[in-house]
Image 1 (cartoon, rainbow, N blue to C red):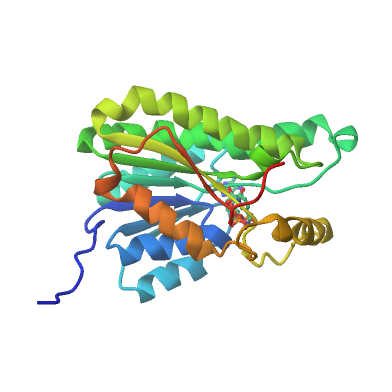
Image 2: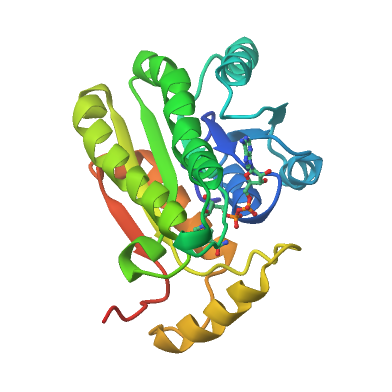
Length: 253
Ligand SMILES: NC(=O)c1ccc[n+]([C@@H]2O[C@H](COP(=O)([O-])OP(=O)(O)OC[C@H]3O[C@@H](n4cnc5c(N)ncnc54)[C@H](O)[C@@H]3O)[C@@H](O)[C@H]2O)c1
């Protein structure tokens, strides 16, 4: 008999950071489809994402926070604790994309990139980890970029920060596996997130990279969301400390 598929994340709480737009919204929708309650944390207004999640019938909590600020992260966690007790799944999706030739790159730009990419990861993981330990279950999934494998120009600060994510997941995974917590990264290829501010240089890179891919199309946010959902499922509990590359098979020369 064909019944309705059991949803693998029923009753879980997923925190998706940087989910006002782009990939993060697709992650929220996909995790909601798996039955999870969704917390959206973003420095920007995320009401459109919240509405999209509600339309799927999922419960949603929206928190406005600058995740590079310890006080904002602490307040976010208190709100989640009060509402739903804790976090089962963290998708660290906050990011900043910026192209700058190294010779023009300022120390301020460098520090801001590390702050948004890595300080926010440190603070958010510190905040959610105790509740994951209490639950004996946790999934930490961090968004990196396939540019870390490609040696792209004008991205020294971005690639350095995104490579830091890979070191973070490998090392933390070894500490927290015993508590049922997995920690993985996804290196994302060019994604059709249709950002309104897409830089002209990005269009150039798009034309440069697509022909080098085995699959000649940009990632869709839903492609990445499927991998996020896979890693979040209880059945994926043996996969940890890994980085999954999702980029249409870019040839590396
Ligand atoms: N789009 C791509 O082509 C692509 C490629 C490789 C990797 N990625 C990675 O995937 C992730 C999502 O990509 P995207 O294109 O959807 O990103 P995006 O830039 O469209 O969205 C990032 C989100 O993070 C939020 N944010 C930024 N700083 C914040 C802060 N301090 N506190 C809280 N929220 C903050 C922004 O408001 C925004 O909603 C990023 O980590 C990005 O680096 C994207």
